[in-house]
Structures are given as C-alpha cells and as structure tokens.
Length: 158
Image 1 (spheres, one colour):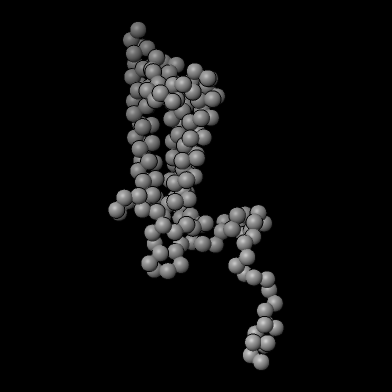
Image 2 (cartoon, rainbow, N blue to C red):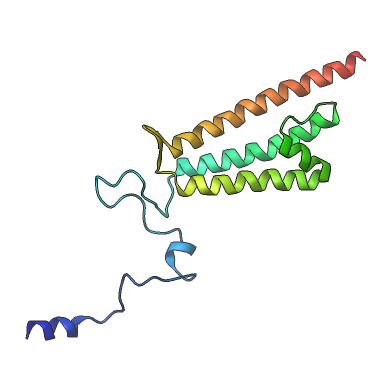
C-alpha cells in the first residue's frame, strides 16, 4: 500500500532530466556555485563564477585588446613583432592580426574560466594562474607604454 501511495504522489517530471537551451543554467547564470561536498574542492565544474574569475577574464581581454593596439602603434614607429605567429598574422593584414590575437586569447580564457577550480600544480589553482596572467598583461602594457615614450623621444631628437 505504501508503494502505491508514493507512486501517486509523484506529479512532476524527473527533476534530473537534462534540459537544453531554455535552461536556467544557460540563460540566467546557472545554479552550481561550488562543490556539493566538503571534499569536492578540486576538479569540480561550476556554472556560476566568482567575481574574481569574471574580473580576471575582463582584465585579460582588455589587456589583450590594448596590447594589440599598442603593438600596432609601436610597429608604425619602427618596432618589430617578436612573436612569430603574430608576425605571420601581420603579413595577412591588421584586421586579421587583431582578430587572431583576440580569438586565441578568448578561447584560452574560456577554457581557463571553465576550469577555474582545477589545480594546475600542487597548490596552484587555475584561478590563481589567471590572476598572474592579468598582472602580466598589466606589466606588459606598462612596458609598451615605456617603449612608446622612447619612440616619441627618438622621433623628437631626429
């Protein structure tokens, strides 16, 4: 009798059924904020990202775009592209150079953001590596600003 009562109480569809495209997970930001259990901290995917992960992605993509612009400015003032892949992209045109640079960075960032809770090496998490990349872009931009100042000074002296 108990089994009959429990079977009649089930009114909804299976709650674990996988939904696509109209799902809350995709359009409204998801529902998994972190691991379910205490021992699940490493190698667990989430579909809601911490503000630090989002900030890292924004800083890195902004840094990449500014780096592309600064590189083009420096190339116009006599610099040479050191990255062989980007040097080939420059031979195809400025638009292709910028698109390739942003696409490579964006795809890499997407993969890093998805795996932000994973551990890369002993204690280093992917999210911490993303923070290092963001800091690296800031250092690179400061270096490029210094180079642009030097190129302006050299143009004035000529």
